[in-house]
Image (cartoon, rainbow, N blue to C red; front, side, top):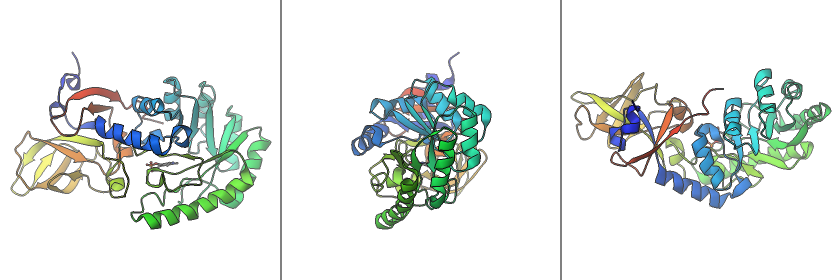
Length: 342
Ligand SMILES: Cc1ncc(COP(=O)(O)O)c(C=O)c1O
């Protein structure tokens, strides 16, 4: 028997909670970005959608080089025939996974920021690296002053150093555009300094919030723009919110209602999701509790808007593709979230 979702004709008939992408909003977002950053100017980050079907849409628009955060994402792209130029924009010392990447048939470049990550790459057959530089967000990346030494270590091990990367994650979400631009410039001054020490053709950086502000990077690693989320929607970006979760109202009380979309269907690290015309109180494992302006009845469907797309998508096995917004839109396709895992 076909899974229930395959029999649903409209979004409001899907078994819930169901992750839904509005394909018109998605097409708008993809087209706007492809015009702003054509071809190799954009190296889409697939961690946001973890979906080869969506990566194919990006490739069809001319973006054939991809960024990933996990070896699994890169491997999935390679198997799907999207392995022209894959960047693991993240550190790993996992010998088995590095070896699998080295043998996957795709062009693979990995980020390194220490002698340990250089050695792991070289020991396991990786041929190309980027030196990852900390440009202000305390996560991975060496100090700009150390980038030349990391590059020397890599070259001494026979690795080709393609250049540098430095993600300005502390700047991408700053609401006021001028302050965001200033933070990007400060971060990119650090990356340029590192690049002078490293050499190479590639300066990889940027995200959805800085895609048009970062003029230093040779390629922008934006990932959220196709689907968008609540945090980014507060910025002055030309992208539309395309990803929502459809939920069913399962209980109604005097002042509140409850729908079946909780922490196990929704990432909460950026705060509560939104429900149009309602005040969301809190989420628990399988519940979102909200105060509606119009009292619903049990069985009604509601559309829940996640505040952070990337970790929300990773909680779902499929994305249902809808022919537009709202509960009456037709379900026209179902895409596997097939790049999950590590
Ligand atoms: C290394 C790296 N590059 C780029 C991005 C850009 O992603 P987004 O488009 O969501 O800003 C991220 C997101 O966290 C990232 O970790």
